[in-house]
Image (cartoon, rainbow, N blue to C red; front, side, top):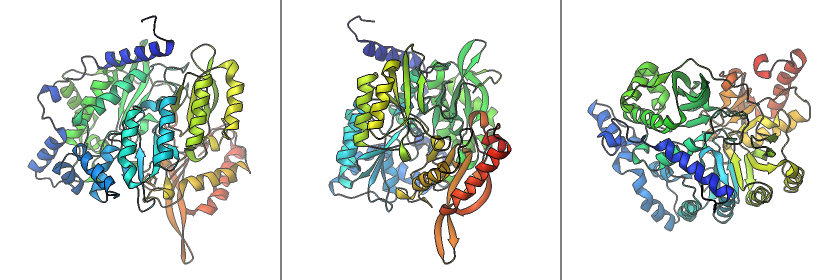
Length: 554
Ligand code: SF4
């Protein structure tokens, strides 16, 4: 490396070169775009559906009429008229990262794209400014290591997208039938336990997706996730494509699992395939092309990857992927090891693999952070760290690269911001979707009820081990209620003549080493009756078998 570069610049260049290496020779798979397939894979798949006598859904017809990526001029024109998109226009505008979320909020929500949750303080400050000047003055951290800006007026939508682009945040395809933000181990590159530093491959795949038109316009949404083997669980087995780092005869490889969609009660299932990190982009590309060509475009309820796998079986699907790649994939015995994971490792102070450095995981009430606090967090990361932050699937933020001796000062500055890094075994694992405050599908105010539930429980019980509580407002399962130790899905509950907000109560779910779909123990519990009911469950566990995890007890 050139001696004139600073350490930070050298690290950036190293990461960049590793990304180039990950892409090299990988983007022209036999049968792919460069192998003679039509330029627009979505249209070719629609043509094939029609040729088989299938009737395209209304959404597919709209996508077919004019490619949604070519509709930016319409987005701008509507903004100039101060109008929001409705109906199918609302779906198509999501190709550009903007969601009209009426009638709940008369506003756009912008879902960003922050691959692996890796973000610089420069970007974080820029997003804070955009949220303040064009939105509600805050961002929400999502469980795909991502951020959302809310309360954006109709005329500000394009400005948000343009200003995000200026700081290197490109929200193209973050909604509708596209590949969502890539989630990954939030401690990539700093975790003493990691098997693979996933940053280069996440970056390479992120840009491959953004720059490959064929990969926009899938049958339905699509999630890809990488677990490099670190301390913080990534929940990759809830994704359509899950890469989990393993060691096979001393070699660090990814193990491939497919078809996760926990809202449909299915985890990504092991394929038996292992691959080197440098092949992950081309293997992802091949999987996507098989899905794009063969996913169901006549019934959106059956349009996710899981349903191709269910119809074909894994052997046939992998054979098609190999055909697409023009080469066989390698198989190995399953050797996934989750022993490094800590259930609430996303909170508190932890040593990094770099001698003398630590990271600190902040608690964020209701996963929301104001623009002012964003600037405060960025200032701490600049003053004491390397100017880098990470977002986790547990809806919180890590400040990284802090010298051990600076940590007390960092903690004092975090307290001064009104934030913290410690939480009870209950509060530390609370995950809630947007809920009725910002989503028209929600049957309940998930974030508010989650906060009230943890307040109630924390005042009455100190449980012996971490417990994860997931609340979602509807069956779309954005906060993955089926994998919580306690999982709550919004439901309307009759109370006399009235209808009140409540939840179907599930217990015993988990992911990774505790993989299990939660079971329904009580339907339709009113939100104000949740506290006593969950408290009884936790007391029964704490009294009967505190040595076991709640997951095992349940
Ligand atoms: Fe909205 Fe349902 Fe997703 Fe919650 S789970 S954010 S209610 S779509």
